[in-house]
Image (cartoon, rainbow, N blue to C red; front, side, top):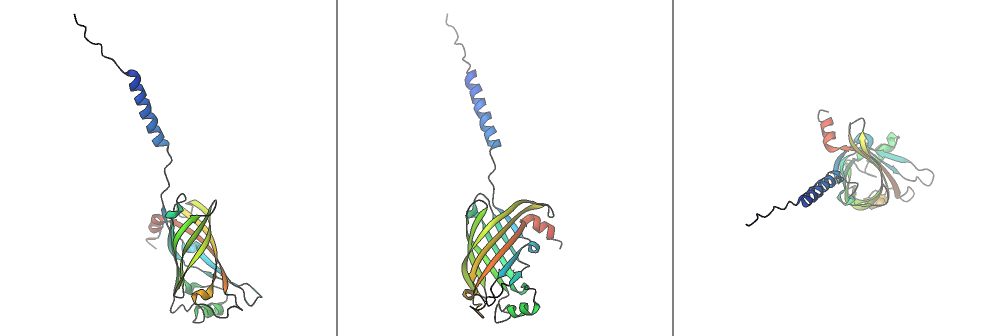
Length: 215
């Protein structure tokens, strides 16, 4: 009499397969989600450019530019994805001296009637240490464009309590020669080299658009 073959149950193998599948699924669920580039809109109420120069060696006056608009794309893990585009209305210059404001707006300096805005458009962003970035881009002032380098600090990325939205904050500095941009009046007695300090607060773009659409 022939005996029927006894079926072999690979219970150990099955358990091993279930274990591997469960472990893999757990790893996938637990794996950190890679940050994606986030687009932000600059908040003009909390973004400004401050310019400082030397006046005949005696003093170091400054001027502020406000009502700045623009966007930035920021990925803290991959700065090569980052991008900054900013527009600065030069008619908003404020030295706290109205007569000086009007002089700087005139043809001797910015000539805002012909060149009403300055722009910055980044071309490269790289990490420069913990919480630091080097931002290289094209600055256009007075109809002339030159490459400049900004040294930026990431102040904070997180929830902005007044907007109830994700926000990003940065400070940046650079030094440039105003004569490179055709604004050379009184140089070098009034310093040709000027220092810029930029502070930026930006709100996640969709949240910004939603909050301001009725304004």
